[in-house]
Image: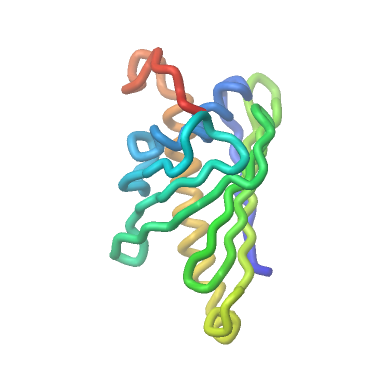
Length: 161
């Protein structure tokens, strides 16, 4: 199983960081790599929430369907999807750290189709691109959280997560 971990510290309270990271509806306005999000599950974000996420990868538009499989408010959540014959599991963890929040994102992938298993020696190339995209996503959200309140496009707007 291939994977990677990204860690960042955010100068914001854990509850606020969790809220922003799990606010799927607002992701396209906050994350430069996401073109659009279509929620497929009604109600607040929780275990079982499904959505379609569209982003540009390898110079083409890609849409994936994801599902939150584990959800612990203000602490962690896990999102999973199958793409290109592989299963991706991304876990987001939030812990109080000094005057802010430590964010740890762990991504694991495993081939599930025969073609993906045969191409597994090339997994490193794909994981490198996946890691860069995820690092950019996390950095975009950290910048949003650390921006002065009056510069946030949705300041005072209640998040859906």
